[in-house]
Amino acid sequence: MAGFKDVFQRIEVKYLLDDMQYTELRKQLEGMAEVDSYGKTSILNIYFDTLDYKLIERSLEKPIYKEKLRLRTYGVANDDTNAFIEIKKKYKGVVYKRRISMPYKKAMEYLVDGKRPEERSQISDEIDYFLKYYKGIRPAMAISYDRIAMAGTTDPDLRITFDTNIRWRTDKLSLSEGNVGKDILLPGQHLMELKIAGAMSIELAKILDELNIRKTSFSKYGKGYVEYMYGEDATERNKSNIKNFRRAV
Image 1: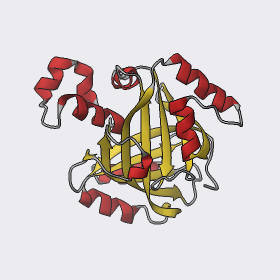
Image 2: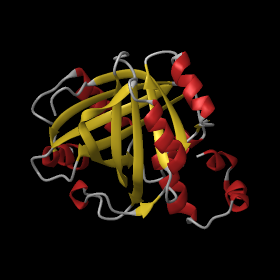
Image 3: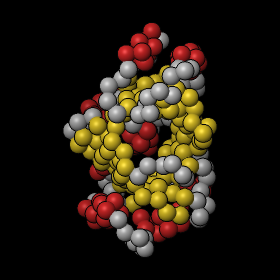
Image 4: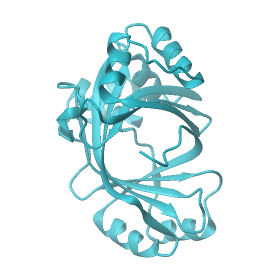
């Protein structure tokens, strides 16, 4: 997809909105940000992990440094769909993302079967190292959702996304299946991510405060993992008896 960057460095802050907050915020953002040229997009991901889920378990402990590996397509995939292999790292609150792209079939052959791509780069070398370092890494969970992305009209570094219909599954781990699985959000909820290069503008901070929109800790893969391991009806008490960090997903 033209215009997509291969390397990102930014701060990402998440917020959980209800329908009323979402509707009012969209009104308030007029003139500050506008929906990008892709409009509403279905984003499909496969997260890779070890057999004992070392990556997500460590992530949920909220360490200073953590990393993930995922395969992503925009829209339902076929063999020739452009796919992105991404290493996402977070260090002291700053997100670093590096990715390469190739046809979906080749990406799966690379990540699952070990068939290395013809073109090599520094990023592909980093992915090679990641796959070797985490022995036994394999497709662990599909996470999919519908996204509306907005970009700042005057601030080119401002990006705001709204995700709905966030779903997870551990079977049929192919991105050709589309956005199917078990729902993570409650009806009427919207997950907003604010992505900025530095500090939030005073104007935007004031809008969020007036609408009582507060930042939250939210991991899509983490939420799916907790439901998968302990069931969607698991109580907070039951979760706390397993490990305290899992309550912070």
